[in-house]
Length: 396
Length: 105
Image (cartoon, rainbow over all chains, first blue to last red; front, side):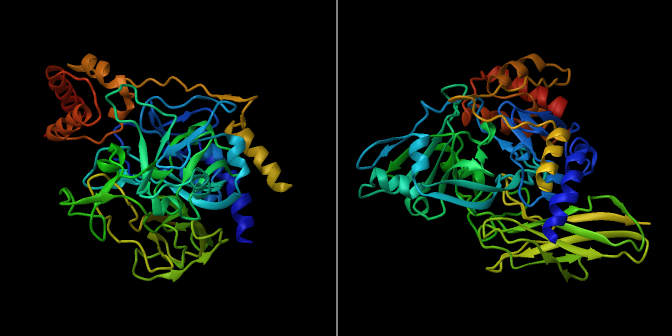
């Protein structure tokens, strides 16, 4: 039933709301110096434009009324200017080499001959929610729209690595894509995983998203999927996999995408961490998608408060909802379970019996007890955002 | 079936059509999107150097920063991200960003 509700009524609502999304009040009014612009990129619908070169495009919140994020609405984030715009599939290969028994040139046909693996997993930018940090931090000023819930299909990375044959002494594996820097002095976007992580069962090289080829801007023809971890590792348009006998020292792991090396990944606002470590697993979080912030509700008319909740691969235990600013909490009804890496929709029936202002809040807990803080935890790069969000509504 | 109809309706509403690979070559053309920076001393130098590596909405997207913060960002672009900006021009850029996109302190 829940599914039917989400997939029909709200789908149309979501579609209609897209063009108006910038004015809905999804974000604090002071979030951006200029009004958020919408932009239409190839194979994508109108998305919120952060930057055009390289493209960074945010998903309007209305799409999160859907269990699965449509391909054309999924956010886009590239790091360096020369993004791939044309790929010849007959010529495209993933080179697999380094500390291996042999070097492979893996074609799309080769990739499709490996065992086919399919699961649904949340893809989320490390900096999702950066625009909410106080004090503000530099970077891509995302609202909550740098995430999506997508069904990925591909080959296991470990099957590909095993067919190349790992030599003794392997420590890390690095991943490079077809994107390139505009100048030789700009560090190319290359990421790495430890060999133990790379050989995990669920790490795949995906060639389909939601049953279709990847869109170019989401990493055509194939990208790495590291479910449960932030998307910085999900290297797009894969071109080279290098097995390393020494720790990877590249800029995008050694210097960028790092968080304070402590339990919360946070420091006192405005201060610098003493020691940092690479960001990895996503924090546990929830979001109220409907009603929207500043919505007007009708006295005594039942409202379905709905949203999403997910964790870094540890499923969702429950979602608690408060309609009184956190004084009292009640359990929400959970929607379809698409597995431990997917987000779970939730809904809560509420009939406001008194006029006035209400603060709606949602708080989720995952299966290992991970949950959300009442106040935003701060770090200088603006990562790991998972504060309990507040949605203000007025009942008349 | 109903879901298919809804999907078709969404396609019409959102104006999207799935463009799969045609033949073996899959190509897209990125849109040209222009961002106009505020008028001010050093605008031309800022545009010239910053747009070598990225669009100018990278600037307009940022919160209002202090001079110290803008200096840190420009230095990071030079030392870490490999931007070939001479010292004199870097000063002009910091001045422009602080005046046009600064917090006033």
